[in-house]
Image (cartoon, rainbow, N blue to C red; front, side, top):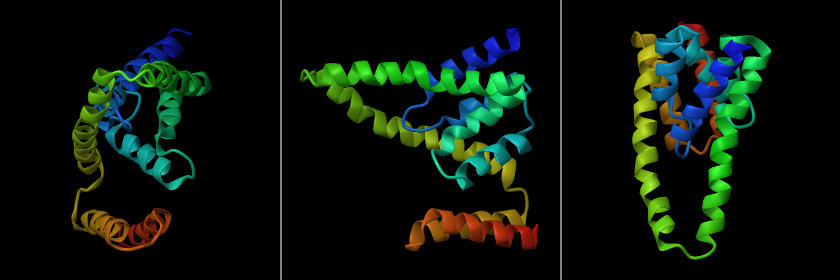
Amino acid sequence: MNEVLDVFLSFVRLGLLSFGSVNLAAMGQVVVEQQHWLTQERFVQGYALGQLLPGPNVLCIILYGYAGAGAWGGLAALLGFFLPPSTLVILAFAFTQRGSPLLTRLYRSLLPVGAGLLLAGLIVLGRGSVNGWASGLVAALSFLLARFTPLPPVLAVVLGLLVGAWLL
């Protein structure tokens, strides 16, 4: 049961550090470097799977918790990641409905913080997945399709998978 508690507390901390989306850099440090629940490659594969499947891509945390402590670890990761931040969001919303100018300014300041965290996460993903010309080509193709075409992102994922399976 100690492993489940470790997973829960790790994901409470990660959930409180993840502004706007999952903080991949911090999550990679905990899951791969500190706890050694997964290798860097498996970590990136779990994130990629979360991108492919329907629903919020952050649900990859269930896989990471599972790697740390089995099925109960997956549940602990889910609850730890979402419960404390959800409580804070509800409280912040209640206060902003009362017209708090301080919280309104804090909300606006979170956008650049989120952008910085996403860029840090991009580096974590790139380090673990782009390791040659073929994987670089798949990454570039996926980016170009998602950014510059009207295709739904899921089609960019499927096309990237097909090209990746052919090249890699």
